[in-house]
Image (cartoon, rainbow, N blue to C red; front, side, top):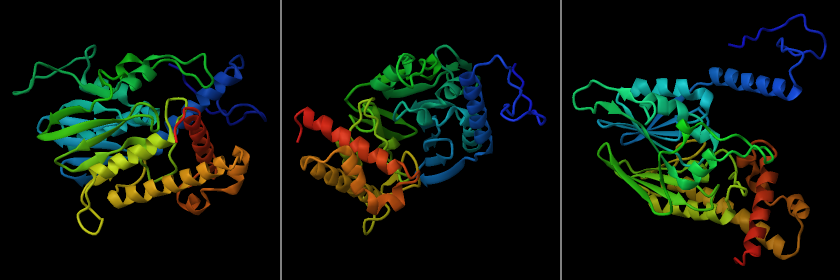
Length: 345
């Protein structure tokens, strides 16, 4: 096992850790980056929030995690970042000692799937089987990971040869039960659950998860309260797909009184919401999309569109990094250009 110790007597320019001199700079930087992530994870606390029905939201492990509890076991939507897995599982075990039965992935991003391997080991898989000796339970139990076929494709295919490429994920993290365009449905803990693929949104493999009895929608990154949509054009995402997804969420939600309450919405990042919050976000995305489209039709270049600041009146809410607005404008511009090239209006 590698042991790293701080060197208080280091000379100027030397690493704070005693890394061997023969290590390459990229390797040293990568290791230090990993150390930083682990240290950040150890300092991060997970917040557990009841939503309604038998649904909870767990925040602080990367993307928001949706938790459904009941007599049949535990179901989670997304698994957060890998370094947070032990904390996350510990928090779930405070709420329920029932077996982990299902993991649903809303996309392939690592802040939503990073804990898949740990959850597979916790719940058991076809290669890691947990034996149980509890009346009413089967002799062995396994966890099923559900996700769109595109998620399996992303996780299982290495991209080392591409810019910012990565090796394939370990097979324990892969979805074990995939679907295509038709909704995936299951009945668990006395509740009907629909997993609804939303094509060409943030990526080409995004899904919404609708808990019908609890009346809760888990949206993944199609909807968030902490920033502009982070559309990944390389992975098949697009601005129109995001808007279609937001409208789909609005089709599922029903307010209780004066557009408040009723169906609860768990975003990919941010606070628990209702229909009115989704509507405001949808309207914001639509307005910015329309502004950029109008400038494209006038022949404006990307630089000119960015300089006009089409997001300015929303930046106070969503430009959390002071660069996310420019990134969003550029993505929308390129997405609209791709739509125009494909002959879409």
